[in-house]
View (cartoon, rainbow, N blue to C red):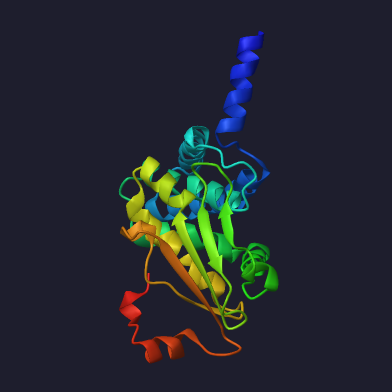
Length: 232
């Protein structure tokens, strides 16, 4: 390999996502298990389906801009795997896609880790301020902890998953991922009120975390006249 070839290889490895350890983990615990269920349900050859989904997963990773060591990297890797399925199965249903999205939470270790990472009401989180890694494809967020410990507001004006969905022509599937935020909050001493998302065409995703030690989202919504239908 000459110098130019090595430089090109280094450029590719630093500017696009790689099939890293997290991706291998996702493939084993989400990809392969989802393939198995879909193959059985649709009477498809499991090995053939697995090969197509994995190769598509790798292709999406290879063309997705890197976000460095972003704290949200796992989420983006997960999105790359999820969006591989509709490409391989264009007629995939909403219920089938939802099954794949929530497959990760069937694993007790992963579910516990997700809820631990989602621990909202900490001083560290309340003092986060702005998040901007400088990578164009990464999330951009601003956290307002002035109401801590009762509430914390985080507003995302950029989202890697939204960027990825646009890149892969998969925006219609994005709300299924957004819905997991409510699932993760459940049992983490926090409720979520969110009435805007980039996925539905809004200018931001407005996360309002409610500390259930003080009050619930339902109480806040009733008091402020926020209808359940407004949640996104």
